[in-house]
Amino acid sequence: MLAPMKKTYFASGITLLFVALCLGCAGPAKNLEQEESSGTRRNGELFPFPIIDAHIHTDFDGAPEKTSQIVHSKEQLIKEFKAANIVGGISHESRHGEKLSDLSKQGVIHCAAITDKVNIKKLELGIKQKKYRCIKFYLGYVHRYAYDKKYEPIYQIAQKYDVPVVFHTGDTYSEKAKLKYAHPLTIDEVAVDHPKVKFVIAHLGNPWIRTAAEVAYKNPNVYLDGSALLIGDISKLDDADLKKYIVEPVSYIFGYIEDPTKILFGTDWPLVDIRAYAEVFKKAIPRKYWVDVFHDNAIRVFKIPGLSLKGDSKL
Image (tube, rainbow, N blue to C red; front, side, top):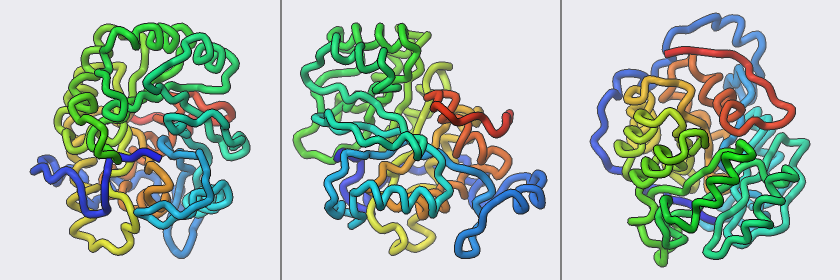
């Protein structure tokens, strides 16, 4: 199980601008009554739209995750999906995972993991057969830059079958990882060289959030997922910490990029409770763009079978 944060209280620490853009405000309350009438209420909290979690891990071992203590099981995932009105997800397979959990009823697709040694023929067959609908690079854990020449055949496969490529970026969950390979600036290289491939920078490049924002702003084929800015039991944190380490970074990204189709909601489950993370994350996004960030953008990038767009918005 891989993640960019070592403990709940570790995050970017970057001084951020544009906080006033959408900090805690809902933005224009467009058709609020209509949203409320069509939404579902759980414990008094409103979820007026279905959500897609663009970053989960489903190599279940049935054990409690060490930081969050969430049991890493299919049953627990389904429980959290229901609690947060989740209708789909993107499963990022572990570096050595081969056995995939069938979560098609939950709208979950799988990304193929790129390890130190890659069987190109096997990868292409998996993509062709739609066993995998995306590709995941664990930069930092694997000691190669995103633009390493050995990765070129993989990018060609991604273009051929029109599947997105996701990069782990930022802090790592292993002391053996090397951070220079996980810097989001390296994604600019492959984005320029492969303009027909969609690339996703996971974790907003944390702690290099400003750099990740610029790479996504500059390149029309680069997107960002906001997973795991904090991990563990975030219910134990006060509002000031949640604001500083989740709301402010996401608000900055949203304001800098000026394109609501560029940001995807994700958690890195089981590192954090899905519903709890969603409740904080949405404070950074103006209400009228919630559908984009929490649902439609994942469909635009990953083309999840059986799910369709709920709306279209422009900043």
